[in-house]
Length: 283
Length: 283
Image 1: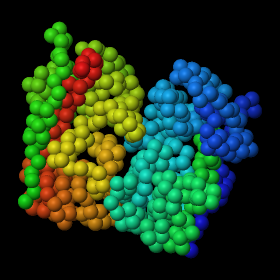
Image 2: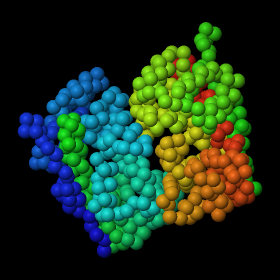
Image 3: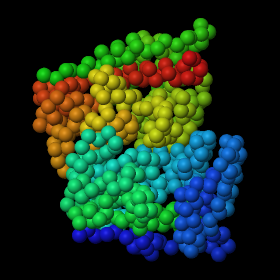
Image 4: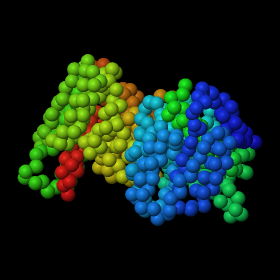
């Protein structure tokens, strides 16, 4: 039976090991601006969970909500004000935004030091390039934290990534290859997914397809990291991995809920604190 | 015996199929600025081959040579002048530059429309992101052209990439996965390279290790694309693939020299023409 990796324990471990910086008494608190356009329920639910977790850690959160029909000009101007506001240290844009809006201006102009979830071109280019990284997407960082917590040495390991989106597949591929892994990326055109996925020492799944991965997709004792969040027919939240089956074959596995998602919100908090420290040049 | 893919034929094919644009008589010719710092022999040799191939295609080339000890300020100022000069449509920076120089300013400020070899953050971020691309590195584009010329349908194909640099491995991984391939990236820590590489329908090698790939690394009838350029003990230029061995097993193979490199220079020419057309808004 696999070791079940509890997101809360991972978050607690890294939070308690975070180096303390010298805060000056006259400094304001770290502050995150959450930008939301429209009233999408899943965005609002994520927003609530961010508030619930970040505020107790001493982070101010301010929601900037725009109407779903906001014009491109007003959206860009509102963004510019937030981006320039020295009292705001981190910016979280809830996505997707309405299809009528282009994010080009945001991508090109967001201050890299405030771009705590890596939506801007500068931080994206830093992931893509060899060398030091800026902020990486919180979910990708959460997966790396879980790997670190599990003390998996990535060098020479075979990692299979199922899915290749902007938040997981793309950044993690680059980070994992830089860490020395042999990475295989699968997508909906992959001819024999079981054959590919069952070669993995570490299997990372981010497809949005409920229970895509069964026990027959997994090598015995592999580490299985499930980034999927889906609603089952009975209303339960389930992952892309059939947990009840795979838990009997994998060496370790993240549950859904309570796995990657929990660590992600902690990473967001950590990024806001780092952004605050960088902007205040704390050492 | 494999079909030997001749770079010249690929280049000729795409050049003759290039759509003609309506040039106005009063327009100046397309112009490429080549920036070189120092007197590195291999950079000078590449510069000569660019001149030899581009000038007959009606492209003006201007070399801007700086002393190996140029200061960061003078380097940046010289670059700014070239970047702003409306008579220059494309910029090729010969690399590597001396270790004393930082390319941060160039990466952040190069005009994306002039960045014909994709060294700037904007074009890099466009490769990294889903959606339309800007200029991609000429060598990576050359590999894509060869795949197109060979009429290989990438969807569902197993592609193995050996090497993960900025010019080949990184951009091609993103382009190939977007095209529907299942991509495996190998590096120096890969435990069993033969096992990985012999699964490939398309094997792309860019490591700088002479004759790393023997016949036993290759699946029968695979397409083998060799991006390596190495000097053998007898002074000949050879690739990362042992051509004489692999030619008897592969379905198709690019030779070195006369393969990818030849197509690359043609792609550079095509990019300068595209840059010229974009800057003159030709249709």
